[in-house]
Amino acid sequence: MASHDELTVGEVAQRSGTTVSALHFYEAKGLIHSQRTAGNQRRYSRDMLRRIAIIRAAQRVGMPLASIRDALASLPEARTPTRRDWTRLSAMWREELDARIQQLIQMRDTLDDCIGCGCLSLERCRLANPGDVLGEHGAGPQRWTDAQEE
Image (cartoon, rainbow, N blue to C red; front, side):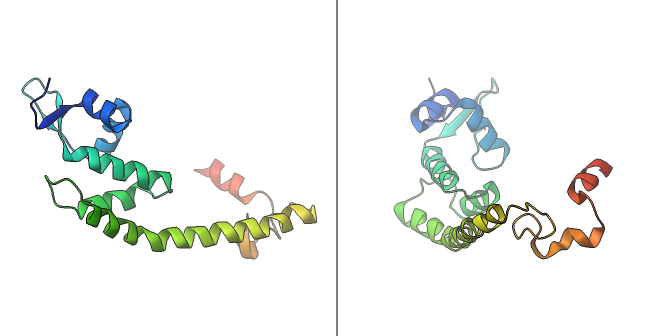
């Protein structure tokens, strides 16, 4: 067992409700960090539990990992994030979430036009090809052609 101030990867996984592989992923992405023992085993400070809770909450509402990482970087090291920290972080994400909600509403409201017309035309479809930008590259399946050339 780790010292009172440190938790093993298994303990953090159990306490946070995540998997060990998720913790490794979060660490690889720079969202959390650990210390290594002389035997190269990961040890996490207890404040990582709150940080992981923040990560999971942000992921549930669809925040990209880069936004989560930037937000966590604004927190002081070696201190458990507080309710005030969470309020500040969630306020930072509110504008981005509002923009996504508007985009989803617009997609929902225009989706029936695309399906309703029956054409499924990429030339006229406001969802798959807004403004017919792919038409500027010529006729045919431009996305398919571009993917094959890469």
